[in-house]
Image (cartoon, rainbow, N blue to C red):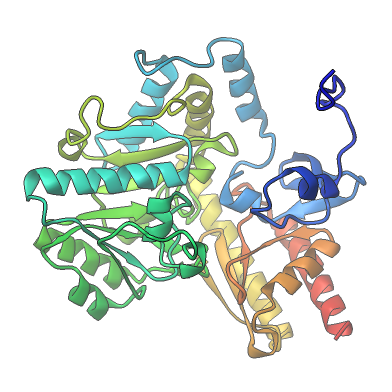
Length: 414
């Protein structure tokens, strides 16, 4: 009998150590192992409760195990799961209608992750430029400290060398410019550029919001040169900034928009949205995906989309944002040796660490977790908060209390 076969595999005990024994070490997860969650509350293997202000890195926008999403998924799971690309399905058609009716877009392409959505967007831009202008128009311009995915193409387009080291040779004709630097954009975006890709709010790069005049200038430069403007709204979209998509708050319309993360509330799905004219570039057979647009994922996404795309829901996000920012500014006043400023948009916020704690955002994160608050980092110098969009004022108050307890413990241990 094969020693690896074990009929108790679904119930055998596992611990954090099991991760180190059987999984490829691409992450260094926390010591605790979550086992169940509801709303913004989460419990680990030991039964300890946590308040989750990460929402799975801005994914569980409606909270964990949202009843409406669970009901939609359960119903669809008993109806139809998967079809090959030779067939369409009703849920994907309904989602496509909903997303195009609510945005600038005429067409949608569905896939499984933000990286895949950005890959599709960049392939579309390259092919469009090749078809319309010729083989010379291939260059892609993106920003330093950006993050667009982990495929070789998208990680190369992302402006963080720590993610590309050792994977060379990288795809060519990619240039990176400083974020929010208009003069650098003017110098870089010439007639050989096929696409400019930008996050309206940089997430992994430190929770840095784009300046309106910068994004407006990118739009003007793309119009001038014939390049396509791609907004990566994988993290900033789906209500996170208080608008359905961040571009709506800026008044700058891209040619292509990518969405993922909160679109499925934890069920893998992503979308690339674009115009009718540009969509014709990807004709039958030029691009595809096995699981993209499957009935399970699109049913979930439609439920999420229709919940978030309501004026009252989005108004509450803005209200919660103001309340959370006010509380975080109080933390900054109380702990000037730890934090200097809060920045971001909506419920995607970053606390910038002071010089005394430079490079120690991870230590602050761990201290908060020890008190029962889950938060994120965005590099070594920014503590990131991205709670579910359904967060209450009472939960914000609790989070601030737990964060300050963690900071007190950290300071006491110095």
